[in-house]
Figure 1 (cartoon, rainbow, N blue to C red):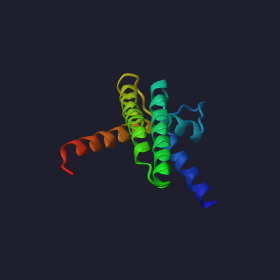
Figure 2: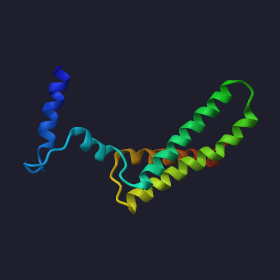
Figure 3: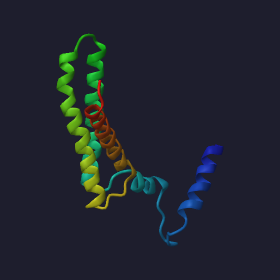
Figure 4: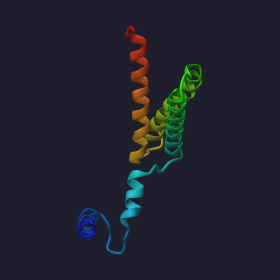
Length: 126
């Protein structure tokens, strides 16, 4: 109950500014605009990151099953393509389409980690 009251007070104080008297938007609608992607490219970027995570999870389950090293090579390329593709799609969505959804930053982070991993693998001795 106290949590609901605090959320209501926060909602009233933060989201009251900038609205006309006749307008009213729920907190859910405003959060949806801030968090979720608003463009098609933003949704494509999120889909590619979800595909990356699904392929990664499948490869981890196969690796946990035993000696499956040859099979893991089949998962590396699709993971890299979906991760980097998601990052590129997110960059296009932000730069060209004016995407403002916060979740579109997630594919950029995944792409950055993939690029840093590849650069680290290529530049360090094992």
